[in-house]
Image (cartoon, rainbow, N blue to C red):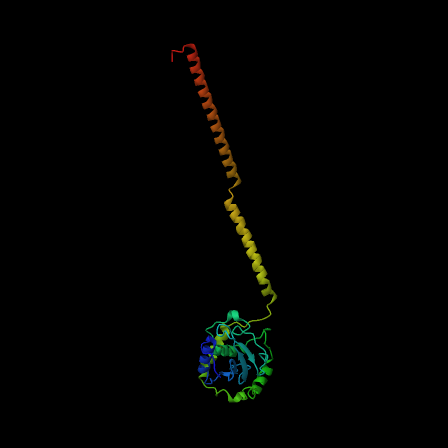
Length: 266
């Protein structure tokens, strides 16, 4: 099947397919022959957990915008941790594109999935919380699971475990500790946080407005003092004008009287 190699998603997926062409001890993934945007994968259950010894098969559905948008992950093998045939809710999956990083890859998603398997589901979409005994029983049965599309048993896909897998196991645990498992049902406390935030912002804005008002408006005593000073200045100016006018009037009157008595004395 031919692909448009100019498409960024196609170029990226072809590169990842080449990198993952050899099966690792913990995982294996390849695209379908007729659809580059649908991959099937197989992962090994993490050691020292209820899933130890289990081998699990699933699908990865990739958007046309990959790697800018995350893939969706679906488990096909019963496991007791994730529902089968349902998109699971991870920070690294399509349910939460806001937390996806384009630098992540299919390999990153698979290691994160392995790391998340021993964690609690806590009601997240596609999660299950089976008992330890049920999960261990499903782990034993998972080895013989055969995908109807791949037509290969899980036991035939992954190579035997060696010490080389320790590094991948450590990386899977590290990824699980860094990438938060998203719960689709926020608690009442989480729901109330936005409202509390809005109230705090409103209260803060009100306090800031009051502070600005208090800063911009001068104290009452200062305003009274200023008004009194202005009134005093106005009164003084008025008195000076009246006195100046009276002085001029008296001076003119004296001149008039002198001229009236003796016109040639001036």
